[in-house]
Length: 198
Length: 92
Image (cartoon, rainbow over all chains, first blue to last red; front, side):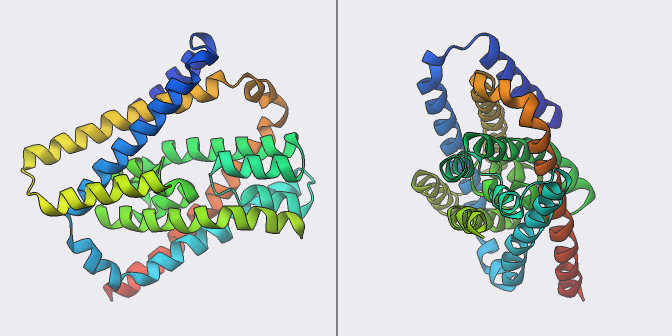
């Protein structure tokens, strides 16, 4: 599975670079959207088949709070450290790390607030974060625990990386991942400008 | 966001209402597998098509990669230790 993930992304990148022209962009967007909705639908069926997880969630309410707060704290620490390494201002490194994997949004916000360069860094950071997520989830599920698969995914745990989390964990983790994704996605447009302004 | 929520709720409702045989559950699993492969290919295409992104890659790619690695790494470390504490408390 991991190998097929890497092969899919790589053939996509090579195909996009060498063969597919810009006139195909609308079709690619339609393909991404429909594949995503179809996948989320299948994930929903999985959740529905395991109705009992909703009852279990009440027992696990603590984990629903702990996962997103740990992801936020961890991302900010990692961002500060990167800023320190490259001698960047703290407000920039904190706002770049508050994208939590949502590349389109944090890239756009920081391009508007600062410059195309910082916007591109935010964009690339989150593209790389999503790639790291895709590749690392199978290993995290195997060697750490199911909840930790949500950590690298950040805000993307409600859409693009949810199917992969679902594939390697269980329906309970999928529900927590989805709630985590909603919370973090809601915080991106608040935290990125907030940290930039400090 | 809205469409994602609708797809999810629709799936949950169908999963709740109908009884699935093991064979159908398996088919649902392979649909997911095919969908993931297709989605990742399409995401790869959008990266490959973005020339300005690729030409900037050398200059600022290094910084971005370190950002991505360290934010992911510290998130993983924190979530792992915090969830381990909770799992232990739950089991005891």
